[in-house]
Amino acid sequence: MNRRRTPILAILLAPIAVLLLMQLWSRALVPLYRTVWYSDTVMEWRLGSDRPETRIKASQDAVSRRSEDQQLLDELIVRMQTDESLEVRRTAARSVGGIGSQRPLHADAVDALGELVLTADDDALLSAALDAVGMSAANNRYPDRVVARIGAILDEKHLDWLYRQAAMALGKIGAAQSLPDAVVTNMNALFVAPLRRGEREYLAEAFVESSKGRGLPETTLKVLADAFDQETNRRIRIGIIYALAHSARGYPPATDLISAATSDADRDVARAAQHGLRVVEADRNFAGKEPLAVALDRSQPSEVRVQALQILRSSKVDPAAYEVIVSLSRDIDPEVAIAAFGMFQYLAPTPGDDFDRNVRFPAMYQGMRASDPLIRRAAYGALSTMTVWGMPCSRSSKAVRLDP
Image 1 (cartoon, one colour):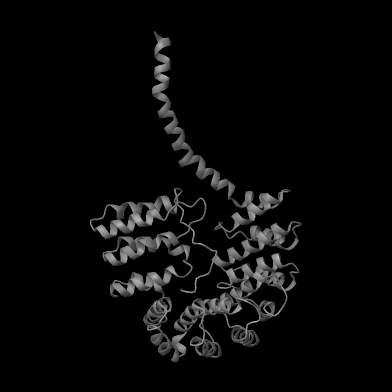
Image 2 (spheres, one colour):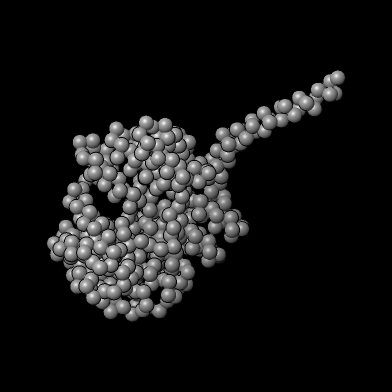
């Protein structure tokens, strides 16, 4: 009799055992694996592996570490400077730049990236150096001689795709610090009389990037304004509009040009001009104020608080602000709550972080039960942008938009 019951009991218990194993895997083993795999000690061991592919993956993973372990960063710099594999050197350089995009780097790391720009004799490695400097420019100041070297690339003979990378690196540096006068003069001259196909367009992209930070010099703004009416490329015209809009506070003619462009025969240009006027208005409203502080200020009108969140969405979001942004999805103002849900896809936690499980997903589930149908729709919309693993869907990096 026992022989007949044993298979039945096993069949009944099997699903329970499988469920328990799944729970153990998802709640204990996976977090433990991530904790160990991304620990400082294991990361350093992986970077020292004899296998180039292991060193490449370790370099990529290092960007996701929130640890400020100097030894790990030093090992990345060594790989960037001396590794026998060109691909490891490129990946390590980009990873150092990625870390620099999150926080200020030690002076040795900044010097190492600058030196790579100055000495790289391979366009692939120089490309990685440009990406790294551009990514880290917001938090790290680069010497004029490094910036001048990047500017000189526009006049040299390189692979075609490198020119755009150089221009974009200059744009990101220009958003954080003043570019040397000679570099500005050369960029203006190349915009007026480009040396190669597409140069005018990627310079426009670079000008937009700089305008979002420090604004543009008056000499550049005048060049852009003078070029607008004669320009036939729609993307360049739109770029000019946004570059002028972000710099309008220091260049009064910009607002008149943008206002006139709202009646442009090209609908996309007219739409960009309408958006540009909102950028000008936002700049007036938020001058000297942190957008997140404005979004949290319940004394402000709804449209101003929503606009503050839109400004955050178009810039790099500080991980320290993630939970505060999520909290706005429970705001008493439904328009603010809806706008906050629209921010969820731009919050990128690091591997092994409990942010999704403890913060983001509970907020979405709460929104899905809200009495306001628009908030429920926004919560479901936020969920639809997430992958099954709860990470944000990445935005395409194939093209750089000219709008903010």
